[in-house]
Length: 254
Image 1 (cartoon, helix red, strand yellow):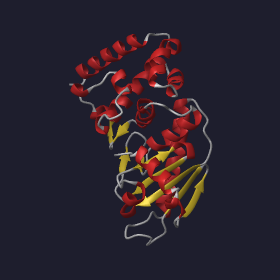
Image 2 (cartoon, rainbow, N blue to C red):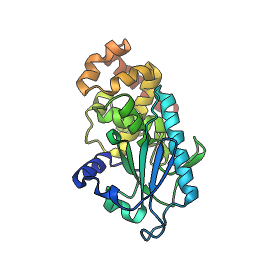
Image 3 (spheres, rainbow, N blue to C red):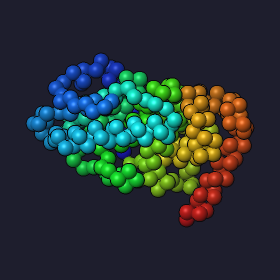
Protein backbone atom coordinates (compact mmCIF):
# COMPACT_ATOMS: atom_id res chain seq x y z
CA UNK A 1 0.00 0.00 0.00
CA UNK A 2 1.62 3.18 -1.13
CA UNK A 3 2.03 5.90 1.46
CA UNK A 4 2.91 8.92 -0.68
CA UNK A 5 4.05 10.77 2.46
CA UNK A 6 6.13 13.36 0.63
CA UNK A 7 3.51 13.82 -2.08
CA UNK A 8 0.83 14.43 0.52
CA UNK A 9 2.96 16.98 2.38
CA UNK A 10 3.75 18.87 -0.81
CA UNK A 11 0.15 18.79 -1.94
CA UNK A 12 -1.18 20.14 1.32
CA UNK A 13 1.52 22.82 1.46
CA UNK A 14 0.77 24.04 -2.05
CA UNK A 15 -2.98 24.16 -1.47
CA UNK A 16 -2.71 25.78 1.98
CA UNK A 17 -4.95 23.14 3.56
CA UNK A 18 -7.88 24.01 1.27
CA UNK A 19 -9.03 20.33 1.19
CA UNK A 20 -9.39 20.37 4.95
CA UNK A 21 -11.94 23.17 4.85
CA UNK A 22 -14.62 21.15 3.04
CA UNK A 23 -17.59 19.52 4.75
CA UNK A 24 -16.75 16.92 7.38
CA UNK A 25 -18.39 15.02 10.22
CA UNK A 26 -16.16 15.34 13.27
CA UNK A 27 -16.05 12.59 15.90
CA UNK A 28 -13.60 12.50 18.82
CA UNK A 29 -12.63 9.72 21.19
CA UNK A 30 -9.75 10.22 23.60
CA UNK A 31 -6.98 11.81 21.52
CA UNK A 32 -8.20 10.66 18.07
CA UNK A 33 -10.22 13.28 16.17
CA UNK A 34 -11.79 11.64 13.13
CA UNK A 35 -13.20 13.55 10.18
CA UNK A 36 -15.42 11.62 7.77
CA UNK A 37 -17.69 12.55 4.89
CA UNK A 38 -21.48 12.78 5.36
CA UNK A 39 -23.79 10.42 3.47
CA UNK A 40 -24.09 11.13 -0.25
CA UNK A 41 -21.17 13.56 -0.21
CA UNK A 42 -19.70 11.66 -3.16
CA UNK A 43 -20.88 8.71 -5.23
CA UNK A 44 -18.95 6.36 -2.95
CA UNK A 45 -20.26 5.15 0.40
CA UNK A 46 -19.18 7.22 3.40
CA UNK A 47 -18.24 5.57 6.74
CA UNK A 48 -21.22 4.71 8.94
CA UNK A 49 -21.35 5.09 12.73
CA UNK A 50 -20.05 1.58 13.36
CA UNK A 51 -17.07 2.10 11.07
CA UNK A 52 -16.36 5.48 12.64
CA UNK A 53 -16.24 3.92 16.09
CA UNK A 54 -13.96 1.12 14.88
CA UNK A 55 -11.61 3.66 13.28
CA UNK A 56 -11.45 5.63 16.51
CA UNK A 57 -10.73 2.51 18.54
CA UNK A 58 -8.07 1.46 16.03
CA UNK A 59 -6.34 4.83 16.35
CA UNK A 60 -6.40 4.69 20.14
CA UNK A 61 -4.98 1.15 20.10
CA UNK A 62 -2.28 2.13 17.59
CA UNK A 63 -1.03 5.03 19.69
CA UNK A 64 -1.00 2.88 22.82
CA UNK A 65 1.02 0.18 21.05
CA UNK A 66 3.50 2.69 19.63
CA UNK A 67 3.95 4.39 23.01
CA UNK A 68 4.72 1.04 24.61
CA UNK A 69 7.17 -0.05 21.93
CA UNK A 70 9.06 3.24 21.72
CA UNK A 71 8.97 3.92 25.46
CA UNK A 72 7.25 7.29 25.06
CA UNK A 73 4.03 8.86 26.29
CA UNK A 74 2.41 10.65 23.35
CA UNK A 75 -1.06 11.93 24.28
CA UNK A 76 -1.73 14.90 21.98
CA UNK A 77 -4.70 14.97 19.62
CA UNK A 78 -4.28 13.41 16.18
CA UNK A 79 -6.57 14.58 13.40
CA UNK A 80 -7.51 11.88 10.91
CA UNK A 81 -9.21 12.84 7.64
CA UNK A 82 -10.84 9.93 5.80
CA UNK A 83 -11.52 10.79 2.17
CA UNK A 84 -14.04 8.74 0.23
CA UNK A 85 -12.47 6.46 -2.35
CA UNK A 86 -13.77 8.30 -5.39
CA UNK A 87 -12.36 11.68 -4.28
CA UNK A 88 -9.13 10.60 -2.58
CA UNK A 89 -6.82 10.52 -5.58
CA UNK A 90 -7.68 14.09 -6.54
CA UNK A 91 -7.61 15.38 -2.98
CA UNK A 92 -4.57 13.65 -1.46
CA UNK A 93 -2.73 12.16 -4.44
CA UNK A 94 -3.68 8.49 -3.94
CA UNK A 95 -6.71 6.26 -3.41
CA UNK A 96 -4.57 3.35 -2.21
CA UNK A 97 -3.68 4.50 1.29
CA UNK A 98 -2.61 7.94 2.36
CA UNK A 99 0.02 9.73 4.36
CA UNK A 100 0.85 11.68 7.47
CA UNK A 101 1.90 15.24 8.20
CA UNK A 102 3.78 14.47 11.43
CA UNK A 103 4.55 18.03 12.53
CA UNK A 104 0.87 18.94 12.33
CA UNK A 105 -0.29 15.60 13.80
CA UNK A 106 -2.54 14.94 10.80
CA UNK A 107 -3.31 11.74 8.89
CA UNK A 108 -4.89 11.91 5.43
CA UNK A 109 -6.23 8.56 4.29
CA UNK A 110 -8.55 6.84 1.83
CA UNK A 111 -11.75 5.24 3.03
CA UNK A 112 -12.69 2.12 1.11
CA UNK A 113 -15.13 -0.64 1.94
CA UNK A 114 -12.46 -3.24 1.09
CA UNK A 115 -10.24 -3.69 4.15
CA UNK A 116 -7.37 -5.94 5.10
CA UNK A 117 -7.68 -7.89 8.33
CA UNK A 118 -4.81 -7.49 10.77
CA UNK A 119 -4.37 -11.03 12.09
CA UNK A 120 -1.60 -10.00 14.46
CA UNK A 121 -3.85 -7.48 16.21
CA UNK A 122 -7.15 -9.29 15.58
CA UNK A 123 -8.96 -6.34 14.06
CA UNK A 124 -9.94 -4.79 10.75
CA UNK A 125 -7.28 -2.49 9.33
CA UNK A 126 -8.81 0.83 8.29
CA UNK A 127 -5.70 2.98 8.54
CA UNK A 128 -3.20 0.75 10.30
CA UNK A 129 -0.27 1.52 12.55
CA UNK A 130 2.16 2.95 9.97
CA UNK A 131 0.97 6.56 9.74
CA UNK A 132 0.47 6.83 13.49
CA UNK A 133 4.12 5.82 13.98
CA UNK A 134 5.19 8.81 11.90
CA UNK A 135 3.22 11.16 14.12
CA UNK A 136 4.25 9.68 17.47
CA UNK A 137 7.93 9.25 16.54
CA UNK A 138 8.36 12.76 15.10
CA UNK A 139 6.60 14.40 18.04
CA UNK A 140 8.26 12.35 20.79
CA UNK A 141 11.73 11.59 19.40
CA UNK A 142 12.26 14.51 17.05
CA UNK A 143 12.25 14.98 13.30
CA UNK A 144 13.88 12.11 11.46
CA UNK A 145 16.42 13.16 8.85
CA UNK A 146 16.66 9.90 6.91
CA UNK A 147 14.21 7.90 4.85
CA UNK A 148 15.58 4.72 6.45
CA UNK A 149 14.59 5.68 9.98
CA UNK A 150 11.40 7.52 9.01
CA UNK A 151 9.90 4.63 7.08
CA UNK A 152 11.86 1.89 8.81
CA UNK A 153 10.35 2.74 12.19
CA UNK A 154 6.83 2.86 10.78
CA UNK A 155 7.19 -0.39 8.86
CA UNK A 156 8.97 -2.23 11.68
CA UNK A 157 6.35 -1.38 14.27
CA UNK A 158 3.48 -2.01 11.85
CA UNK A 159 5.09 -5.30 10.89
CA UNK A 160 3.55 -5.39 7.43
CA UNK A 161 3.65 -3.81 4.01
CA UNK A 162 0.84 -4.00 1.46
CA UNK A 163 -1.18 -6.36 3.64
CA UNK A 164 1.61 -8.92 4.10
CA UNK A 165 4.26 -9.37 6.77
CA UNK A 166 7.44 -7.57 5.80
CA UNK A 167 9.41 -10.82 5.86
CA UNK A 168 7.19 -12.14 3.07
CA UNK A 169 8.22 -9.19 0.90
CA UNK A 170 11.97 -9.77 1.14
CA UNK A 171 14.07 -10.90 -1.79
CA UNK A 172 17.52 -12.22 -0.91
CA UNK A 173 18.97 -11.04 -4.21
CA UNK A 174 17.80 -7.47 -3.61
CA UNK A 175 18.86 -7.07 0.01
CA UNK A 176 20.80 -3.87 0.74
CA UNK A 177 23.35 -3.08 3.43
CA UNK A 178 22.45 -0.47 6.09
CA UNK A 179 24.67 2.05 4.28
CA UNK A 180 22.90 1.37 1.00
CA UNK A 181 19.52 1.77 2.72
CA UNK A 182 20.67 5.09 4.18
CA UNK A 183 21.56 6.29 0.69
CA UNK A 184 18.54 4.77 -1.08
CA UNK A 185 16.39 7.85 -1.52
CA UNK A 186 15.24 6.59 -4.93
CA UNK A 187 15.00 2.89 -4.12
CA UNK A 188 11.77 1.25 -5.30
CA UNK A 189 9.19 1.51 -2.54
CA UNK A 190 8.19 -2.14 -2.78
CA UNK A 191 11.76 -3.16 -1.92
CA UNK A 192 12.66 -0.29 0.39
CA UNK A 193 9.78 -0.44 2.87
CA UNK A 194 10.12 -4.14 3.78
CA UNK A 195 13.91 -3.94 3.92
CA UNK A 196 13.96 -0.79 6.03
CA UNK A 197 11.44 -2.33 8.43
CA UNK A 198 13.37 -5.59 8.58
CA UNK A 199 16.61 -3.76 9.39
CA UNK A 200 15.05 -1.54 12.05
CA UNK A 201 13.41 -4.55 13.72
CA UNK A 202 16.83 -6.16 13.88
CA UNK A 203 18.37 -2.93 15.19
CA UNK A 204 15.76 -2.78 17.96
CA UNK A 205 16.50 -6.36 19.01
CA UNK A 206 20.28 -6.14 18.67
CA UNK A 207 20.93 -2.75 20.31
CA UNK A 208 17.64 -1.79 22.03
CA UNK A 209 14.91 0.62 21.05
CA UNK A 210 16.32 3.24 23.44
CA UNK A 211 19.60 3.39 21.52
CA UNK A 212 17.84 3.30 18.15
CA UNK A 213 15.71 6.26 19.28
CA UNK A 214 18.89 8.33 19.63
CA UNK A 215 19.84 7.52 16.04
CA UNK A 216 16.37 8.42 14.78
CA UNK A 217 17.02 12.17 14.60
CA UNK A 218 20.54 11.99 13.16
CA UNK A 219 21.72 12.65 9.62
CA UNK A 220 23.26 9.86 7.53
CA UNK A 221 26.78 10.99 8.40
CA UNK A 222 25.97 11.36 12.11
CA UNK A 223 24.50 7.86 12.26
CA UNK A 224 27.76 6.44 10.94
CA UNK A 225 30.08 8.64 13.01
CA UNK A 226 28.13 8.45 16.28
CA UNK A 227 27.04 4.81 16.09
CA UNK A 228 29.83 3.48 18.28
CA UNK A 229 29.32 6.21 20.87
CA UNK A 230 25.64 5.32 21.18
CA UNK A 231 25.74 1.53 20.87
CA UNK A 232 29.24 0.61 21.98
CA UNK A 233 30.02 -1.06 18.65
CA UNK A 234 31.61 0.21 15.47
CA UNK A 235 29.32 0.93 12.55
CA UNK A 236 31.34 -1.44 10.36
CA UNK A 237 30.84 -4.26 12.85
CA UNK A 238 27.11 -3.61 12.92
CA UNK A 239 26.97 -3.92 9.13
CA UNK A 240 28.79 -7.25 9.24
CA UNK A 241 26.52 -8.56 11.99
CA UNK A 242 23.46 -7.53 9.99
CA UNK A 243 24.83 -9.19 6.85
CA UNK A 244 25.43 -12.41 8.80
CA UNK A 245 21.92 -12.19 10.24
CA UNK A 246 20.39 -11.82 6.76
CA UNK A 247 22.40 -14.79 5.45
CA UNK A 248 21.24 -16.92 8.36
CA UNK A 249 17.64 -15.75 7.98
CA UNK A 250 17.43 -16.71 4.32
CA UNK A 251 19.26 -19.99 4.91
CA UNK A 252 16.61 -20.93 7.49
CA UNK A 253 13.65 -19.70 5.42
CA UNK A 254 14.20 -21.23 1.98
